[in-house]
Amino acid sequence: MRLEEIYEPIAGELVEVEGVISSSIHDGGNETILELGDYLLSSPGKRTRPALVILCERAARGGAASENGRVLIETAAVVELMHMSSLIHDDVLDGAVMRHGKASMNAKWGNEVSIAFGDYVYAKAFELIGRSGSKDVFACLSEAIRLMCEGELGHVCRRGHFDMARGDYIGMLEKKTASFFGACCQLGVIVGGDKGEVRRVLGEFGFNLGMAFQIVDDCKDLMGEEELLGKKAGQDVLAGDVTLPVLLLFESAGESEQAELKRLLKSGANGEGFRRIRELALGSEALSESKEMARHYLGLAKEQLGVLAESAYKESLVCLADYITEMRF
Image (cartoon, rainbow, N blue to C red; front, side, top):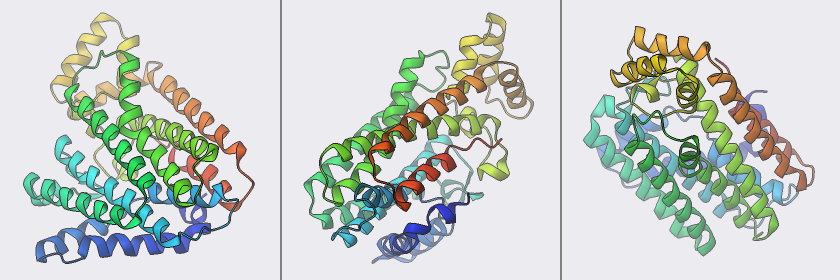
């Protein structure tokens, strides 16, 4: 199923979200900000996070819209602005040269401009949060951002530690990715007026979906092709980031293979080196075990949706979960 079909029940709302994102970035901006903003918005990405906010609000209410329509749109825009800001900063940290099939902002304008603009986008998100007037919305987002920053900091500080314990890696994923996915789903429920069991259940759905998403992303980084990824294959591995398939490869490798892996990874693993890492991964159980873990988390996510009444929005949540964790490589 194509993304456009999955988003069909909320297509109008996503158009509104796009308008809020654009006006927020361009509002009162100088010439440089307008140029940077136009470049950023020219490659919009999948808009997964705002879609989760809106779909969860509608699915939690059995398909009925709440009276907080404008707050919902602005909250959905907030999570996308925060995500966009984090990607700009991530590309600086990773030394990435491509994003969404074109030059990354840091490759085009340099690290200093990229960091400052990423901060600007983040600030615009907080302006929007202030409009909601909801302490629950602010508290949910603040906790998710704190956890995301803790996870990213741990991720960066442990670059090159390819022999870390699996539990430590899972803990980083929970903070870095899963917590924000879970918050997006909870935010929709909060805006819709539900603070009880449905909020917890959809938070669990988003959390487990985020875990599956990140594991699949790890696999795609190692095995994907540039045309599908929209960025350089092996970008995370080449930056020294610990990813699940590489971690599992270390666990299963003998001493000589571990020594070879460390040598390849520490040298940047360009060209033939990266192809050798792929070769070792294909000859091991690392990829199949990673895929199995992703399927496990995806299954846990879908289980949570059983409490919801049937609706087009619930169906879109199921289809979106399948779409973003599809393993094509």
